[in-house]
Figure (cartoon, rainbow, N blue to C red):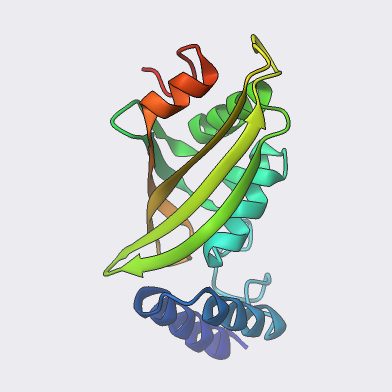
Length: 181
């Protein structure tokens, strides 16, 4: 099974790098899962999941579980919002995800589109939520942006940069918060 999984994994990442069609990613991911790849008998580290493009990332952020968010990142991953602080490693990314969820308990993260350019994957999204959590003011935000990813050989995010219009965010929130250094 390991040889088949290696072949399917190679095909999946070739498709990830060469296509802009999310449907192709879903088909390849389904084949990967149905073939039993990613199980303990496969060569992929079974304690970490294989990133299957935007849908898995969207589900992770909507899960209300920072551990699920971290599951799509490599152990040594970095995450940066605009030119702000770089969060390094899964513990810091976990803390970031938990902080976002505490501030916006009803946050919904919606994929708008997913594409790739050379070795970079681009995930365009829309965020909606109410600042009703810790220190919240009850203001609702609805803002779009995108993440640029670089993934490792296991399909986990190694580096993520999030781009968001800070002025628009601050205007909607009416306080300086989530994005500040």
